[in-house]
Image (cartoon, rainbow, N blue to C red; front, side, top):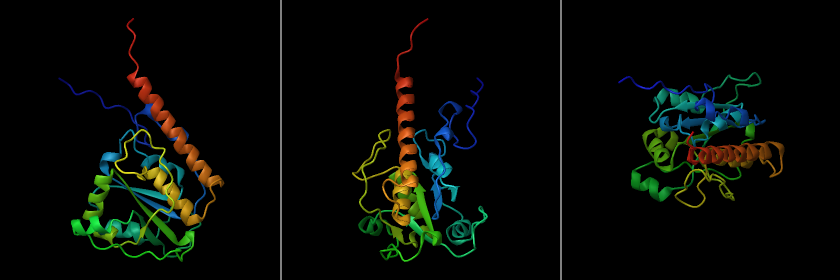
Amino acid sequence: MSKPEPRPRCPSCHRALRTCVCALARPVAHQVEVLILMHPMEVHEAKGTGHLLHLCLPRSRVMVGEEFDAAELEAALHGRWTSWADTDGAPRHSLLLYPDTAEQDAALGLAAACPLPLPWPQPPERLRLVVIDGTWRKSRKMLYLNSALQALPRLPLLDVEDSGYTIRKAHLPGQLSSFEAAAQALAQLHNWSAGGDANATLHEVFRQFVAQQLQLRQRNQAPQRSA
């Protein structure tokens, strides 16, 4: 028996064409560079938000993997990015978007997180935010497998907002999707106001994404009428 043909996918968001989210993306102006480390299982995950985040952030890059080549990861974390014309080549200070989990880190044998002075002394144009895009379990494994990530100072989110990620189950209160967490971190690092253009745009994009996914779910669960 021949294998079924794979569903055609959008080359930008990597979803099946009928569930493409590219039309939802609205690029926002931001100075903090964003490196999205995407677990391979998230590449085609229908409920994943990493690709949509990338489409909304012109100064972002995506690397897919679980255990990355050490030299490639080091270059992505600390090297110069030349994707945009206005870069001045000045060094960027990388921050890992990750909660303070010192007790769990010690149990796993992870290095203690580098302390992060608050308020952060660098302006947004000197920062690079590192986002691990995966389930909580997968993100822990990626942190464990990549010592360069353990060496980064961690950025904790302050005054975490309630999640609107109703299409995926959270295991603990305060857990957010990659999109929501990154949006809150960027607002924190840029000092965006709640009603500012960039902040409001990202919130609206995410709201529309969740609404689209709920609509697709309802459509797939609807009973099929016989002819």
